[in-house]
Every structure is written in C-alpha cells, then in structure tokens.
Image (tube, rainbow, N blue to C red):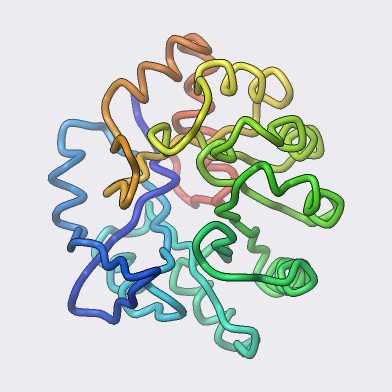
Length: 251
C-alpha cells in the first residue's frame, strides 16, 4: 500500500538551526529519511519546518529540490513577510504555514487568524498548528471559521478532544501522527475522527520524532489499518493528504 507522509522534518546542519528551550536536534538529512523509509512505498510527503528552524527556509527549499515534486513544504513565517516572498515560496513547493503553540512561544490568535487568511488568499495555503487540545476551548471560536486548518499529532491531549471533533465537523484536518506524544488511545481517537469526517485524517511518520517519548514505528500504521479497515485506511494513509496538499501527480 502506498503512503503519503504528511509530517516529517529534515534537519540539515549545513543550514541555520536555533535552540528551542535549550534543545538542538541531531542531524536527519533527506538521505537519512530515504534510508529510514526505504522499505515503504512512498507516494510523497510534506516536509515540516520545526521550531528549531525558525523563519529560515533554506533547508526546506534544498530538501524539496532533493526529494522532488511529490513532496511539499510547510514553513514558518515572520509577521513582516512580503506577499512576493509568499508567492515565491509557493512556486518552490511550499503549501502551508505552521504555528508552534506548544513550544514556539506565545502567539496571538489575532495574528494567526490574520496570517491564515492572508496566505490562503495569496497562495491557497492552509495553516498547521502544533498545540495541546486542552487549549482548543479558548481557540476554537477563532479557528472554526478559517478557510483551512490542520492540527498536529491528534491534538496530543485527551482534554479538549471534543473541540477537535468540532473542527473536523467543519472540514478541518487532523494528523494521525506522533502516537508517542499523546496521552490517550490513538485507535479510539482515529475511529471517532474518521466517523465524524472520513476526509479529515492525514497519516505521517513524524520522523525523526524529535523529543517524542516513543518514536515512529511500523505498529503506528498497523493501528490505523486495524482501527479502520483497508479501504478506509487508504484515505488516511494516502488519499486525504494528496488532495489536501494539492499534489499535481497521478499516483
């Protein structure tokens, strides 16, 4: 079965890296990524900028060039980014803007909303949020009306999961990633999210699983297959992400 990896990081020490709360990840190049998943049938993927990348895109653009047109990028941007730069990044294969609300420092929700609308109007991008679902109660009223939102790692916390379901009801997405980061049974969450909206879930490896208590393992894929069955799992493992990231290839 083909997989689309909707969430992984490339960490290349040739390009700028910044410490986050004192943490600097080990190198994980595009060659390391290919080697780690050499036994998988990959239909493409989304390279995610982490907090340790800051606002630098040099690593991302290099990785996109190396991995090829089946891969897209998700980046972080400063407030004063120009429209021309966003359009330039879109032409290079970037497809979304990410906010780290878990380890990336305080972010005003008004800024997130403003930037989400701006990048969607300019380049048809969505926004991706790394957050704790326990905080969705205070954020959901602002997030629900946005054009397109994706929440990382099943929201990570059981508290606030019902708010995650409300986002999914509205058509927003959730990544079935980072099972070693969550405090609940991923199988039950996957079933509920899929029942609420079969188009909502996107599989990803979360490699190299920086700071995760349990890194990605083959059993993560088995959890999805066993929770949903083969046909439904295909949507999660490949089809939903290809549509969401607007991959212009026939697989």
